Length: 626
Image (cartoon, rainbow, N blue to C red; front, side, top):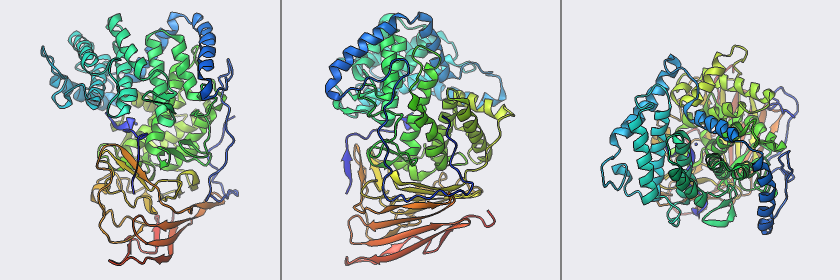
């Protein structure tokens, strides 16, 4: 049964997404059982300059007064050039900054940007009396329509501000953009409207695209326009800490990170030091004493786990989408505020830095993000495994620009190896100019080696996932339990995801990187997914309506153990949804193969017999000799 959640939202990455060493795979003893969640002590996070003011929700008024007193003193010492410097940096994060538009390395990315922007420019309704900007996004009073309209205007503004496009610097483009923003403000997105429909468009989607556009057009934008737009954003995204349409709900994970960026840009545009500090402090959740800090480990719910798991929406393994979005937004803000009066100095940023090696690297194979941690995004034709992998790689390199050198050097080598090995869906064709510029710097740096593929056995107990990696291949298991959802579906996505968390087994082969990104989900039999044990009854579509929801089975057992860092075993008790089918399943992962065993399969329902995946009882093996 699908459980609805009003906390779920569109994936923002897809609407337009002391130095610690990496995992030791040298053969030293590294065994742990993972049928229960690891326990971690709550972290107290702080910014070095002024410490952490631990407060409770009930102490919000005291927190606000305290913050205002301290930040007003801080604001008085901030000079205008600090805002100018960071606004220029924010613009460069959108355009790529200083690069050679005539250089062959940027030709494809420039053409992609120019083609899309020019298409939207031609289609833009610039007539008098218009009620929408594009025919397919009418009326603009609809949250989805004004949200996507802002996204297109940002693309136009980016092309206008980027050298080498057909729109670069044209006065008529800038003028039309200013008029278009006024229409959206008057008819769609303004402080006088109550939220309706999907909250995400009001509090994250629209304000993020609007603030980015204001950054790019700030030199041309009249002061009264900028004041109106920042007031609107202040109304719907006043801080990173709370859901505006549900003030008792604290923001977590990717949503908190996205809101922190929005608040920071608003603070820079209004030259308000208190607001910029509020954005920075939102990363650490200073308001609530670090309870929802992005720089702490959790033992349940949303966030990073010490075992490398990442969960969003309460119970979904979401490293590859929401986890990547969190990484990207946090990396952007750390880089944006570096060497400024608002530098992120929380000592617990090491949690995020360690997550690159602990959380993300094990689930990226030659630049592909493993589908087992992409949730309902597996059903998105325009956001496949190589797209999410490229996004994560881009975020890692962005984070490297502001991270300690020991981390940054290791990540650049990791990224270089991913980029060089993926010749099926090359990275340069998947990213924009800013990401391409960072990658080019790494590829051109002869002092940075290309890291070999990560090897080892990884059990992510916090999200019921297992990854077994050898030099030429990798095996991934997607499990579920009463803790972790078997699937998430909604908004017309993942309609046939019934069995994706019932032990589905993925095999990644270095010689066939197109296995899951080339029409796999559109053509696979959803009743016969590799590694699953199912019955033959027909299932109804799930998630076809508005909103999203999850299904968590009732079994308690799902997890595994690691031996010497390179071998492992996993097990799952299967209690089928909607039938009496029961099974005990186990997997044994060795140097050259992974073997699956099934036992105690039973059911007492009348009707068709049970069946299992085409892989039978045997192996998911990598190439011999690897």
